[in-house]
Each structure stands twice: as structure tokens, then as C-alpha cells.
Image 1 (cartoon, rainbow, N blue to C red):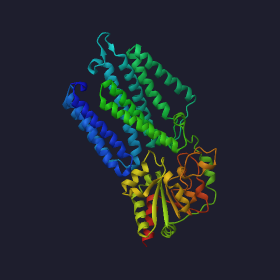
Image 2: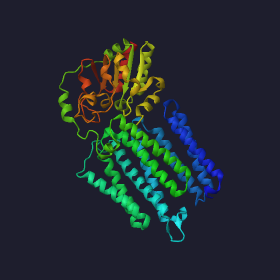
Image 3: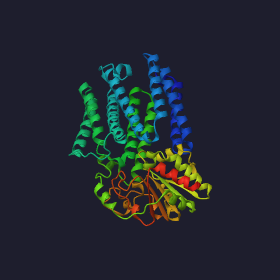
Length: 470
């Protein structure tokens, strides 16, 4: 049954679309994110169920078995995945969405009659459907191969440093121009070589676009690939004449694009510059190594416990180091201990802290940190100057004053958390030799009001809590 002739099908898809909109709205805040997830799950179940029961399907049992297998894999993965591995899991999911779009486009190309896109008069695919198919397969292939590279970089299976190919801009522009030209030509000639050449070139450009991007830009890459996956799904929705896919894809695509813009703004970067090359292309290991010879103050857990216990307000700044050490639960315990002693505790989150948008928010929510204690950069930056202690745990680039003072720095112009304005800065770091994703040393380490706490983040926070209790 075609959905256009049955108003109940259109109504079901409309309800599913509303659920998706409400899900996105719910996900905009940690306090409503669980409700948003539930609405999204219900909307997707309704859309899939409607599609299965209102269309002629070759083998419903086979489809249900496939759904059961995929659902079981997803359930087990979600239960076992560590929060530190969430960014690469998201990248992997994006790659699967892109691959699904490519496979759907290939199926429609090889059997257009089954998809209702065959022009009976000419025996060829409808020209409009060719445009949809060409765009869908191109975006899907770029999403797949780009997400694979992002996954490998995030998982540490590939160097997070930018890999600059000689003449990469010429190669990228030439490949993109060829894809666009072939897509236009595909309208007039639906020969197999055209379709599969578009697919192959799109897989290649996905690799070429992401390889030059460094680890510091990964939050933008993740949100950008999320947007691509949505547009690929929307394009395939037109090919399948499925309004639910069009709505879902458009929502994911537009929200991902908006998020990418927010991430770029948070780093004072243009979207084009992120695509064109790496953030902090040089490792910066030379200057960083020399900087560690400068004098700095080392503190202990007892020192930190005393300073924070005597404070009126402590602002905690989490970064990826907290995620690696799985220190969020110990950090929440430290916050509870401070509050019990009458200290006001707040958490400051930079938009690009971690390896994907909202990474720190998710970790703090997992540890049951109250939502009203967590603040974004623009809401809390003015409070550092009035705070007794800024407690930085595993963050580097997002607290680096070089972003404001050093025009040669790869992070210059990026808005940062002004932790150096606090009376005392406590900085947890594994060693003085390491640097952030951008590969630059942090001036705050060597300031008179900074005390370095060199240790594993979780172990150090646990020792601080013990010292407070004693």
C-alpha cells in the first residue's frame, strides 16, 4: 500500500515527526534528555512499524530477524561502552548511516521498478529520482568514509595529528568538481559506470576531507558528520517516497549543521577552515618541551583539600583528562563534600571540551551532578575573578590564555574559560610534559597563583576527598 493513498499512514508519520522534534528539544538540556530519548525511540518505532505494516515486503520474517540482530548488537554495545569511548561510537554509528544510504541507493539503481522510480515510457530511471539518488549516494559515501577516519583517530588507531597531503586542496576541489559534474551528467545518462564512479569518488573524498583534520577539531567533525548522515537519509527518503525518512533526515541534518556552527563559533573558526585543514597542524612539541623548564609550583592532595575547604566558591573545570581517568564519580563526591562544608560549587563547561559536543555534560550527568550546578562558558566566565579556587581537571586548550594573547598560536581567537583570574588555580595533570590537542603549552601552569597536581585524575581527586574528610 502506498502511503499517499492512506491518510492513517501520513498521520502516523506526522506523529513520528512531532516525536522527533520534541526529542531534539528534550536533548537540548540534560534535565530533559531522558524524556527526549524516549520520545525519539517511540517516534522511530512508530515510523518503522508503519512502514513494515503498510508496504509490500518480500520477507517480513527476514526483516524482523535483521532488526532483532541489529537491536541486540546495539543494546549490548550501549551497555558495555565506556563513556570515554562514546565519541568513537558516535562516529561509528554515523558511518553505518552513511553506508545504509549507499546500499539503499545501489538497490534502487539496480532495481528501480521495485522502488517505483522507473519511467515506463523510456525504461530508464526518472530524472528527478536520479538527482535524489546521486546526492544520496554521494553524501552517504562521504559520511561513511569520513566517519571511518574519525573513528580511527578518536580510538587512537590512527594518529590524531593532521595528515597533510601535498596539493590536497587541488585534489579535493578536483574530486568534488568531478562528483558534481557526474551527478549532473547522471540526469541525462543513467549508465552504471556513472553511478558507481560517483560512489567511488565520494568514498575517496570522504577520506581526503577528514585525514587533514587534527584531534582538536574532532568535536566539529563529529557534529558535521552527524549533519551529513541526516542529509543522506533525507535524500534516500525522497527516493523511497517515505515522508518519515525525509522528516527525520532533515531534522538530523539541520540540527547537526547548527551544532557544527556553534562548535566553530566556540573555537573562533570558520566551517570552511575546519574542512580545509587541521587545527594546530604543528605538534608544537618543541616549544612545549622547552616551556617545562620554567619554574612551577607542585602541590599535594592535602594542599588542595585545605585550599578548597577554606574557599567560599570553587569552580570545577572538567576536560578530556577527566573522561580518560573516569574521575567523574570521584569529582561529584568531592563536590558533595565541599558543599557539606559550606563551600559553593559550580562546574564550568567549554563547548568543545572533550571529543564530542556535550561530552562533559554527559559524564557529569552520569555521575548525578545536579544540573543547576553546571554552567556554559558564557554564563560563568565572569565569575572566575570572584572565585577563590578554579579546579581544572584534565582540561588544557580550553583554559589556555594564549588564545587571547598569542597571534601565532593555533588556538588564537578561541574563547576560553578564564581560570587564571581565580585567586588560586589547581591544575590536575598527569605530567608537565604533555600538551593538549592543539599541541601548545599552557601559560597558566607557570603562574604564581597556580598549583600543579601531577597524578592520575581519579586517584588525585580520591586523595583530596580523603584529606577533606580527615
